[in-house]
Length: 515
Image 1 (cartoon, helix red, strand yellow):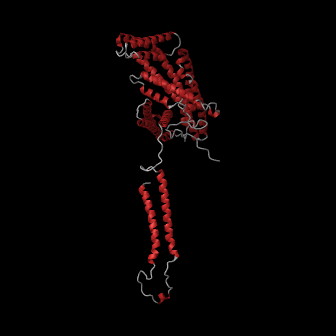
Image 2 (cartoon, one colour):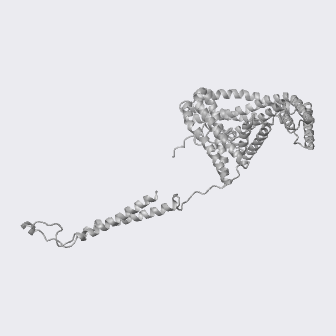
Image 3 (cartoon, rainbow, N blue to C red):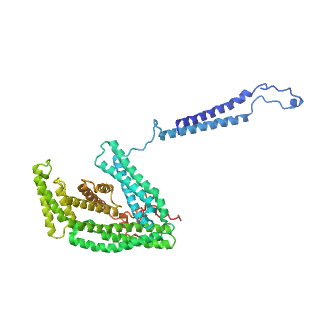
């Protein structure tokens, strides 16, 4: 309320007082020995009338007194309202109760939470949309894919701002606060874009009317993954025999986790069928989404084993050529191909280190199982330090290593996103942006490996609060850890769905009626 409105109320109260006083004065003004208006002489009838009183009756004061009392009440009420509003109003120039500015630490916590939430929403939306696109095709799902791309763009920008902030840019405290505001705002926009399309996607799917067709899509993918999981176990055994434990360390335990997700999916697919048969489509849709999320993550886990197998074989075939290319780079550096900025002593040390790395890799080739990706990584880094301009084969080796590291970190974060924090996600986002960029191959590898390390630390610190549950919670621990369930209830909560923060948990069941 403005000050002019306050003045208006004060004038109304004052006017009431004046009117009341007028009513008190009016009877005095009208009491007189003569009539204020001349009248004709009274006839006999007038003479018979009762004589006129010279004093006003007491009842004439009732209305004036009531008006004055009412005016007083209104004036007092207006005063109290003005006093109370003056204490809490936010009009500039007046005392007000303003919210406290968050501390830098609080702003950073808000930014981290916003990044994690937005990243989870994008990943979950991508998973559900894959099932929808499989059934309806690209044409019908283009609006939702467009929203997902736009949300991903906002999220990528938020991660970029956050990374610059972590690196100390900008330095001005006020500008740094604005940078955190920008992170939160970008994340909020990503969520808004997904929230805006959630209802349309639900209408397209029609799960609350009939989940039969959607169940068939999920069950088909489930059967395919059951076969692939068995093959993945055999593949892992073969990789371990050929490349040793270090060669398969990135996917150790993935087959078991995939089986855990498939057991969870089995439970919820059966429950969805039963609910659909009984006509409870709301509950069927809930169980279907839980099963879809688990099946999608089982696919990521199995796919990680298959991807690593292909990359290890490619790397093993590339190691001899990389060794030859590395030796050529060393020879060129000895002949003066290294930059003049390198001091002779520093160049000699780097040449000696590169010779040692290549010699160690040659010994590994004949010494039993070894990790060819790690061998390529060491060759590429040793040659890169010579600064002669890596040859084509060494550059190809470095790119293969970097892409493998990014893919491995991406898969780990995807299937453990219920525990992974903002730092690991931000490093991974930067590494993904740098894949294929000139001069950033080694940096991408370092960022991706560090992201994986931080994510593993987050998972170990998180633990598994749903371990050891009953039959209804079979596989719930892995589902919560993977973000399939939102961990909002004792049994793991509702499944995550396409959408932003406002809609991703909409598959929850209604509250039971009060007894």
